[in-house]
Length: 357
Ligand SMILES: Cc1cc2nc3c(=O)[nH]c(=O)nc-3n(C[C@H](O)[C@H](O)[C@H](O)COP(=O)(O)OP(=O)(O)OC[C@H]3O[C@@H](n4cnc5c(N)ncnc54)[C@H](O)[C@@H]3O)c2cc1C
Image (tube, rainbow, N blue to C red; front, side):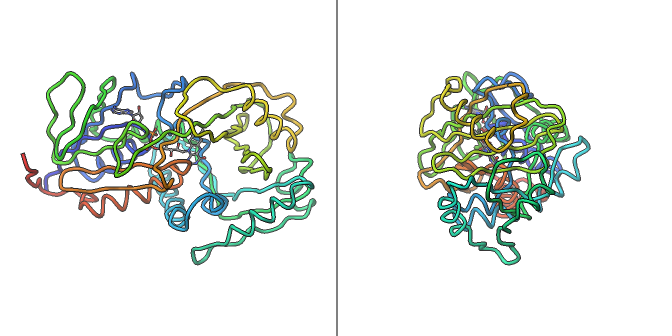
């Protein structure tokens, strides 16, 4: 059985996961991306996959997403578990659950949100209310919130380490850096200033620059990366707040990510003072030790979204497009990729099929 030739436009989260999966299935893969090199740059223009905090929160995100997103999310957590186990590099992946916290004055907001978090999938556990003593046992570093709930099945992943490992552990993949794809048609990837490249399959995963069945828009997200030795936080924490969806995610023993704004704009300019102050003040209100944290980076990026904020895949012979992962790319990518590979028959190597010239 010979592998097929596959051209992928975009070396972001979906592009790297597809390349890794397709290369291991025995296909010949080329990936095109305008980025100058595979690593993160934090310049506001890199793949959104690098900027993501890496929360895998099917239940907490039910506030803003559909039952379909939640179901894809629960499947993806299981898939990430086995992907991370297959990677040689150490990629942080924790399944300790996540916490929802609310200050006393925000109890009404919290109750409204919790009422919308009905678990849809069989086996999904409801948020569990914690006493202050139970919270102090789970997360001694947190102080101040009057109300807390544990979502025990949620997870998180180190997005930068996963992006790097998927790229460097994809056997035989040709990575074409500095190449901007102008257009994809069945079996062809057209790069600026070059003859079209021919493949058995062309795959469009260019995020905000991609084409999809509907118009793709960018939704601005800003984060603050904080360095604090021995911060002690073990799991992602969301603070319920009337105006913000603020989270603090532990990335390593001394690095935390505080996020994220959600602004309907494709503006990639640096993080605003307002967002930075609001995010940091909210995080500090539950985590007093942040007093001594050092601001390592203010990061900005765009989430690729379709009009209904739902992900979409389209398949025609020789051409696949996946887009619209919005604020759930890490939550959705493995299940979406698996579904596309099954639907196209690319999950295992096959003999080439002719694509219309
Ligand atoms: C601040 C922030 C926080 C987030 N937090 C989370 C989270 O906690 N959990 C979660 O599940 N999701 C999160 N997300 C969402 C997630 O990052 C995205 O949904 C995901 O990265 C989308 O993946 P993608 O492959 O479609 O796009 P991207 O990862 O953006 O990749 C697109 C790639 O296409 C390339 N490209 C662009 N133009 C071209 C071209 N013309 N030719 C070729 N290549 C091109 C880009 O350089 C890039 O490498 C967050 C996003 C942001 C911005």
